[in-house]
Length: 214
Image (cartoon, rainbow, N blue to C red; front, side, top):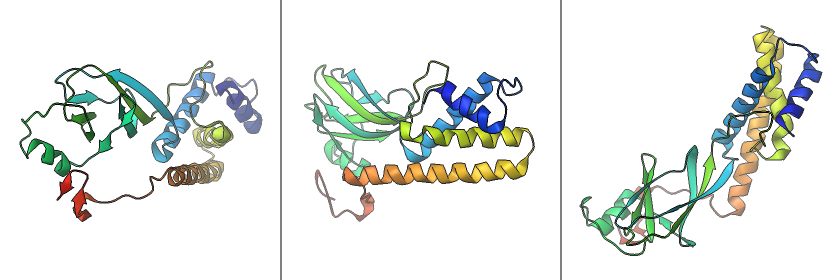
C-alpha cells in the first residue's frame, strides 16, 4: 500500500473523507511513527550498504539510521563478530596496538565497528543492517513489509481517536495495534530462526572463543 492508500483507508474507517481536521501531513506522520515502532521493536526494515576501507583505519561508522547490524563482509567474505575480550586477544590487551592484515573479525561500540586486523588497503566493506524507516511523503515507498501495511491503519485510528479524546475507541484500536506489533515481532523471530541466528550466548559463559581459549 502507498501512504495515500493507507490515508484513504483510515479516513473511510473514521468517517473523515474530505475532512480537513486531520491533515495529510498529520496522517503521514502517524504512518511514519507506526513504521518506526515496527522497525525498532521487530527489526523488520532491512538494508544493505557498502563503503570502502582505508589503509591503517580500524574504526568505521555505522550507516545512517542503523538500528542493528546483522552481518559485515570484507570483499564479500563474512567477518566474525567478536567480543571485547576476543578483540583483546588480537591486541594483547593493549588498545593502542595495531595489528594489520586482512580483516577477519569485527567488534561494535558507540556507533562504530572496529575491524581486526586493521586493513592495509582500500577494499569493499558491506553492511547488512536493520534500520529506521525514512520520513513518509506521498511518494514514499513504505519500508515495512507490504503484508503489514494494513496494520498501520489501526495505529492511525488510535491516534485520531486519542486526538478527539475518545479514549474508549483509542484504547480499542491501541489494543489492536499492539497485537499487530506482536504479530510482526513473532514473524521476525521466525525469520531469524530460519536463518540460524536464534541462539544468543553471553561471552562470560563461553569456555573458548573464535580466537582461542578464554
